[in-house]
Each structure stands twice: as structure tokens, then as C-alpha cells.
Image (cartoon, rainbow, N blue to C red; front, side, top):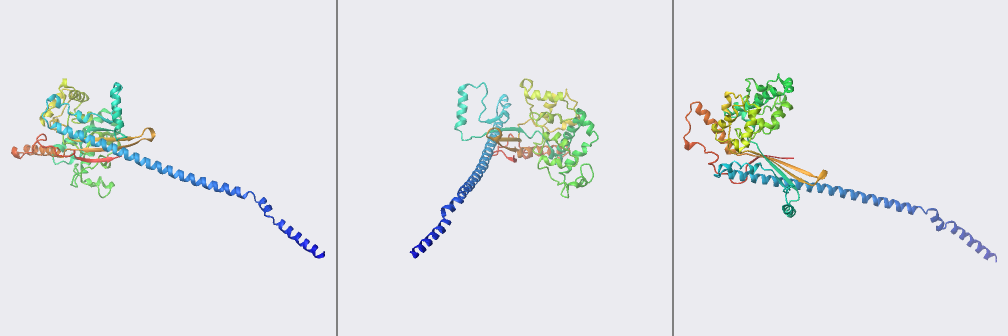
Length: 423
């Protein structure tokens, strides 16, 4: 009996110990840990998913923009190729013997604006509009593009300030000076601010940039004026870009903006009165008036008034002079102005590709300059031969003289591109 009581007490003590360390009671006290662990795990999963989604979105946008840039580049490139084709067609057509009335319209081959998809005017009927839309839909080009072609050769070539031809040197300097002097006369604000500026010295320093001699065109050592630019200046070479003119001592931003639209480094060594701008025509002589320029532009644009100026060399100059001389006070130096009424030979192409609409659209512009090197060389040679004749040297026999551009065979392949920039 005693032994039974002892065993029962031991069993009761063991049960108390077990109840004291009951796992059910332990779980009841820590019941929130699982919920916190689940919430923390879910937060980490959401964070990782959002980061992966954000990285994917950024990568998608970057790659999409890169693809759009490629589309705009090749759209601009395609537009440029079409522009080169138009110039080539113009050059080929210029070699043909065409009736005078038709020949005068050849410039429309390169002048006429071009865009793709073809613009649909308001007056186009529904059938033509649907045909144009279908052509655009089946084409592989899902971007749009435009291009413009301008006459580059009928601007003032600043590199001619260091030409081998004395005529080109003197006439180029005269034209640049006329731009500044006519601005002084026409603009009172410009005159009050810059009437003390020696623009002849400024033009001489533009020439000093290119000449080989250390003696400048003003008769003094030119290196002192360029000393602030460094030991490598002046570079004694022609300008490679128009923007380099900004580095010439004395050339302010206002002066540069005044002449930048009228100058080039890809001129055709003569002014074409049929394509030259109003500003370039006015710079031909200090006595050229606005009325004379207006009359020249009206005549070249209207067949009833005579149409484009005609002739070669002096005949071209005399035809132009006969139109403007009654409205201008031309100086005797005007008769030395190099003019060419031939077709345009140097072009500036601006091709633009566009993809997308609105703020998401991307755009690429390619600017290229096309020149006819052989024609430019022929022009310079003509001036040099004429100067030798003036000095008494015997002219070359006709068999040794270079043939004109119309007699020369057109080079194979695309027109020669000498300048190319992308932005």
C-alpha cells in the first residue's frame, strides 16, 4: 500500500513536470512569429519583383530609344541618298541639248522640296489620297523624312582670300568689306556701336589665318594678333569649317552672325546671279542698292522679264550689269567681279529623318556638301590664265586649254561629298 502511494506521487510529479513544459502552452505564447515571418517574406518578394520590373522597363525604354534612333538615322540616310540621286539627274540633264524653255526649268530637279510619306494636300481627291496611303502602308519605311537642297557655290568663299588668283583675292575681300560697310549705313544701332572698328583689318586677319608668310596682309607681323590663341596659331591653312572663323582675333559673335549666312568654304570661285541670295547680290559692289537687287531677283524669276541671266564669263557679268546698272551706283571695280551663269555645281543637302510623334518623337539630321572639283579647278585656271594674258604672257593654244564643263564627261558614281555632319 505504501509502495503504491509512492508510485502514484512519482507519477503525479512527472505529470506536473510535463504540464509545466507543455508545447501547446509554448506555442500559444509565440503565436505571432509565423505571421511576421510571412509578411517579411512577402515584402522581400514584392521588392525583388518591383526591382526586376523596373530594370526591365528601363532596359526596354533604352533599347526602344536606340531602335528609334537607328530608324531615324536610316531615314535621314535614305533621304540623303535620294537627294544625291536628284543632283546626279540634274547633272546628267544639264549635259543634254535641251530647248531653252525646258532648260530653264532644270533647276526644279533639285530645288523642288521632297518629303516621305508624300504629303496629301487638301484638294486631293479621295482616290489619290487612298493610293498614297496604301503606298505608305506597304513600304518598309515606317519613319518619315524630308530633305532640302541649296546652292552652296554662290556664296562668298572665304578661303579665296588666300587664292593664287589675285582677282579672287581682291574681289573676296571687297565683298566681305561691303557686307560690313552696308550694315553700317543701313543700321543706326550697329553704326553707333561699331563705327570705330577697322573692318579692313578684320578681313585681313581672316586672310592671315591662311597665308604662309609671317607678314600679314596689313604689312605687319601677324603672329602677335594670334598670340592669345596659342603657339600653333595662325595655322597657315584654309578654313576647314565656317565655325573656325570665330577664332579670328577681332571676330565677335555679332560680326560672325552677320556674315555666316553669306560665306562658305565650298564656293565655285564665282557668283551665280541666278541662285545667289539677296545678301550676296548686294555685297557684289558698294554701290549696289536694294532696288537693284529686287530688280535682278524679279528678272531671273520671271520669263517675261528675261528669265535667268545667260552667258559665260564676261557675257554673264554684262547681262547682270545691264539689268541693275540703272538702279545702282556701280564702281569701276564691279567689272572685275567673277560671275558664272552656268548651272549650279556645289550643293548643300540637309536631310532629316523623324520617327514617332509628339514629345516621344526622335529626329536625326545629316548635312552634306557636294562639289564639282573639276569645275572649281577650271574656274581658278581661267582666272590665272586671264591674269597672265593681262601681264603680257602668251595664252596657251586652244588644244592645250582645258575644256569647259559641258564638254567634260560626267564622272561615274554618285556626286562627290566633301563634308558630312550628323546631329
